[in-house]
Length: 433
Image (tube, rainbow, N blue to C red):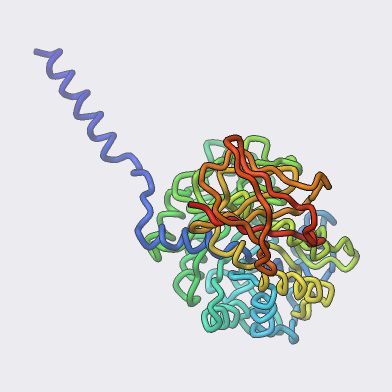
């Protein structure tokens, strides 16, 4: 009898444990639709902008130059970006062919670039500017049909409750007040999601600074999806996607690559993918960084991402006065002209089952395969292995001229002899059945 009672107690305990366990995240229909639209957009503008821009040495200048937090905070007193114009920024993104903008709402220095009520250390209360540029940007994006995502740092170099550098014990920093910091983040995220119109995504960063802490993602992600279920949540933690996330990002690398060394264990998940990269070598404004990527390099990055079923998020660091430097606007005007001409092979496409080849990649949409020849090798043909569908027609996307091809069981040969190859990307459109 005692044994039966004991077994019953154990069964009830197991059932109770299951009922109290955190249920796996199930995205809503609106969220799934938002994911698909996100994948369709393919090209976005990343913006790193804050009081660090004043020093012209990137967004990590406080940390890299060992500037004491109390000294660094003085930068807010003369951050006055009178040249900022949300309409110009959005027009710049649209001209470049970008469909969404991701901008830093709060970076690792802890300064909030929006009018938060959770801390006086923000652009409205702590600077002579006394305006909220993110509100202006949100309204302009909504007006012009550009989606807006907010970058939000989990890491904070200055807040005492975060206690940067503190030892982590039992999932919390020993010297800080972790519950206070988690509440602060949830309160700010609530502001960003409920106060600013048209917010479509939250882009987290800084997880990698504390790999053993309890970030309370179940609460944070759950809060975001409760407020607006369709909002996409991503986290730049350099590992496999976690429960509650809606897209997976890769920092300065194409999906699956690890040239940076940031992500040795980052496998490609089943979520929508995004690569973020800088237009030079800096995220924030750097007055000495003149390693500008060419329009060809940027187009190749976009094409290679699309061919791997990923979006391309290209970063700029505006100047402290709020202007975007001419080197960026000039280059991206060229990129935009290319995208306007060839967008059919980028927007709304997905990566092909044919993996990247030495000559380039393939994107697909409906009954079309777009063969991007970015690195021709001069053999007079390219070979596409293991094409499953029947190819009925091949033309140049640029002018509709017929391209010779031959389909065999092992794949398709595209003959490039006699074709005027584009110096950036020769695109052959295959009609398939």
